[in-house]
Amino acid sequence: MLRVVALFLALLVSACATQPLVIDDPDWLRHEQSVSALNNWELAGRLVVRQDGNTDTVNINWQQLDANFDLRLWGSLGLGAVRVAGVPGAVTVERAGEDPVTLPDLASVSREFFGYEFPTAELLYWVRGLPAPQRSGTYSFDANRMLATLSQDDANGLAWDLSFERYQELEGPNGVTYLPGRITARRDGLELRFLISNWAVPQPPE
Image (tube, rainbow, N blue to C red; front, side, top):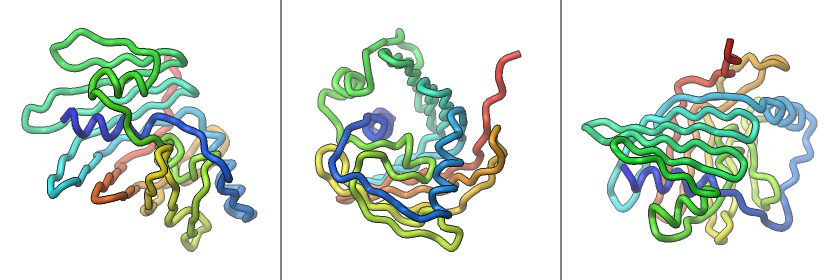
């Protein structure tokens, strides 16, 4: 379970790059604007990790509220639950049966819990079917002018190849937008597959 969580956190740590990818297509720009305007969202589904002939699956619930996030991951067969909650300047990790630990950022979480830095990328964008900003890359569209494939390097120069499928309709505060239901990211024998069963807009507390 820790290995899966480590890989997941690896993709949440942001980093900058030169020569950013620019997609100058009117239909795409309308779609990108619609998705980018959705600041508050929630997804539920599964994350499947394949590496070195092993496959691990965890359930995931990810709620994003502007710059704050709340990730909950839990597995089957008695694997413990993990919650990672972040606000600007602090990330708190809670594991079943252990005291919470608060650290300044996700990079610190990686060092503290797993002992080394992970490759960096911006899953916050990829999971919504958007290229990570300030990164170079290549792409292709599907028939609806949404991303079908994307290739971008992470902060360590490792190349990731992504595919996006099964776009789902979501009614947001600014109208209907479309978000992927299946995202596959691959590099060097590692495959991360997000199978998203539901996208939603969190309801404000009463």
